[in-house]
Length: 280
Image 1 (tube, one colour):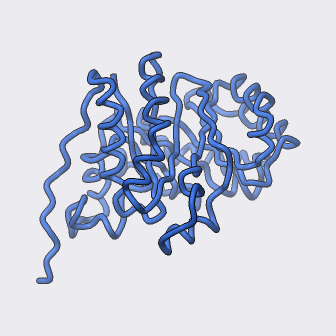
Image 2 (spheres, rainbow, N blue to C red; image 1 turned 90 degrees about the vertical axis):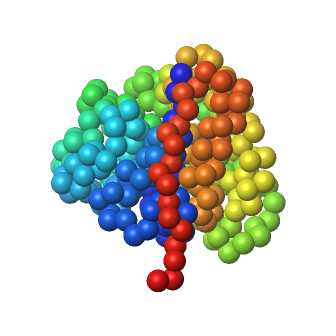
């Protein structure tokens, strides 16, 4: 039994010398991160399709059972809104092909303006996608949460998952740090949604910069994820905080909390030793 956990990225300035060795060449950072977590969000692909050689480097650094949830480029999801995108999609799929089985799902994050009237475009897009990948859709229009069945039918028909981005802990009380104040202006304020549509649910959880509040807020997901594992599902959970300074440690702590309920879960790898940063 395995639970996959990870962060929004595999490198961060505030991780250097704490979670990741420093200095560390770019071609080794993912390998070091993978000693902490066994999954990662592929957010960088949202901004530009990577060079195939770059993706080959990613694949070399992690084992085949490491999970990437790779976000489709914004040119497909936000600019063209899933229509007229054959060339962009072909280029993207060619670029990520070296990841092979490491691609757990292709992540279709849709803009807040993409609402129920656009479901036909989503259904048509999902029908055209190659069956060699799994798909996960994140929506940010409030109407989908007020009336879930129409979207659920489209996703279920395509074997795709609905990815919740749970920001309820962030918005439970006023921000107390600059990073939290910035997150308040940028993150979606939507109800928490828990049902899984497939055997591979994916959760994105956003806590606070205060660890105690983050841990308190994820208790719902600890119980939910433990239930999924008991049902034979294979979940992936990504832990965020506004500043992400302690995200690798928090992801492992979430894993520990679930494992305390289900001791049969396979442990995470031991993190690589890190020498403390020095001035000289």
